[in-house]
Image 1 (cartoon, rainbow, N blue to C red):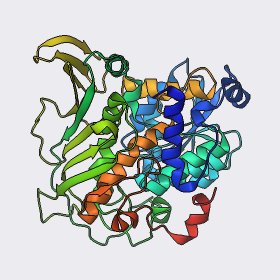
Image 2: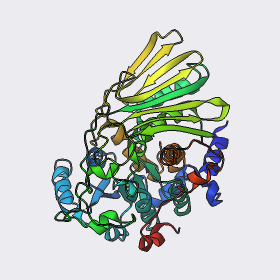
Image 3: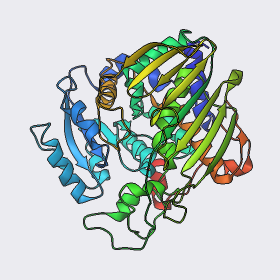
Length: 450
């Protein structure tokens, strides 16, 4: 499939349900980008959501080649802003504004970029609101919570002609780019299968209990577009990931986003035509965790190519010799790749090449940053200036996101199903009930209409 045909396919796949057709974000010319931000213009940046991913943005914002200025630090919790400002002092010699209200941030016409690192339920709504206010958007993974949000975000990026890049930073990893290029050139023959995996030892999670809203937290703002409810303890911080579908996307959206994207990239496939999932809550069965914590998923693609997912959120046994990564199988050999390195094997299982990443982003630790994140954000800045193409444009990233949503839907309804590989719709009436999700009605007009 040619590059242009592939892009057309991706756009039809992602936008099929909306019936939209126009130039891809990737297709916007460098001249157009320069009309927005000249090659030497300073880029004014706001970061919204100052939790565990904050460290990923110190280096790219402070780097002299970025010519970026941190204009705002924004979070629904006051102490998060104060803490973030203190941490940034080590990297910049000026003070950004601290603003709790994301709407006030987006009103600033001098602001060029929103880095959206808010909780998952804010990713698509916050990105679309930023686009509508004229900002480029770097949105952390997962870029969407449903297939409907998948469509809306790609359509919004297209309509407002802005750069949107998802935080699947391994797309900017030099060793990953190198081995994927070799795979596409045939170094392991005809690729037919990839196994993506993640094994973590997450512990017991407290049950939610009604509690007073923590001091300095604007709970209504934190919930934002999600269906509103009373505050429960342990929610505003990391455990919202596991407290139901109102806020989180489970481990598929939290980590499979990365590995499945690399697997799909390596196999050079688009949407699957069949999804099969076995999942359950296997550990601490009486605790507050409300989702599956163990999943085996299988996606079948055109030409019978297969991607499998082996996810163990609370069993850290390293089945594949690493906590996370992807194994790619071809007719003449295999490849193991993770954030640290790749190993190339011949068909007999002998290592014939090994290339390591000397960076600091290879482990299993939560949040933080590292060389891949730095390169990824700087690629985003360079794309805004017309000096580069995005490594993870949203129309490409959201094809990978589709696998996340299909697996979550299959897990929730306890059904396997076929998929229309062009429109992306699921051949299951039960599955299609989860095409979108409920929102707080007063917020819908802010992002559901473009």
